[in-house]
Length: 143
Length: 143
Length: 81
Length: 81
Image (tube, rainbow over all chains, first blue to last red; front, top):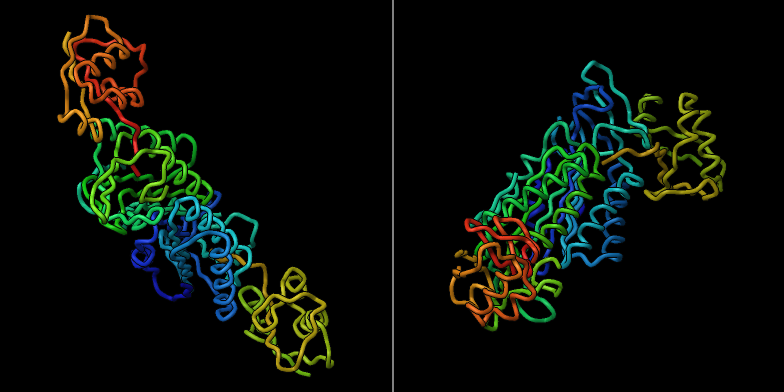
């Protein structure tokens, strides 16, 4: 299941959908807004997407993950707009009969998402100002 | 946080405790009761522990993970007694500034738990009978 | 032929608008669209170099041929997650 | 000295009880406790071979020396998770 949302991500609902009787393992990844990056304080992050294309790319990633690993459920949700401190900008929930698949697919999906999905992050600094994040630098999430 | 519980695991509460502003990534692993193992149907699993020692071993694993990776929060909860299909027998929630640490620590913790923590699983088969699980064989969770 | 190029994030802010119309010869390539975009919006010069171009919601290369009805977009380096 | 050995899971079911008292000479080792356990509960013979022994809630080796107040436990191969 692929979703872009302007609202807080409902992680418990993703877990519930992942907990199918065919599965033995669930891995949920949340990327959340971190307060400090190299000593500078972040007030919040905001995200903008090329929505139609982002959905297509995310669907492609889900399909590739399902070809590569044996997955029961696979959900990717990205929040857009402002994401306050400690709240999730992205959630990936995968379930699989055996745990290696869930861990590997979850890790691959977030790495691939950050490489190819047309979504952009803007840092809003606590001391004022805002910057669009340049990839390959460290930013106020999980990079 | 280490816990053995006779009740269903409250995964949303673990997520909430993991989502600290110092963190950028949360990884939650759930081991859940799978319905079929090599074609044979499982009705439920039940777990028994040497409680005092299991808590000590889990605390040791949390400490080792914190020495090896930079973690913000680290919770390990194991349910004891009967665990119905699709419900979680074990939950591991870790958060970290960067996502590599959360994924690696989560994976290591469940692998280590299965090797050293004095907890035993009994399969209750849908066609009757019950077997204590022999490790290194496949069982009705995520092995 | 006239194509509309969608702009996002830093590109949208530099250009001051969410899309730009570009006039291109029939059979033009994505590379020519990229050059035309910089003429139409010089503020995009640096960013257009480091950006990808999507055509009909798929990543394209500079050699890709464009058609009148195509939907193009400039995709600055992505940073979701 | 008399030690109590806790039993769990398959060991508990084979022995039919959750703990067994064993009489051991002063200064006995974990290896001697393992042998004494099989004498006291022959049904544990096979499982005792493949099990670990814990003393005071820590894994012990067969050479570990036991004291009167120690809490011992037979730990069949674990299968939590």
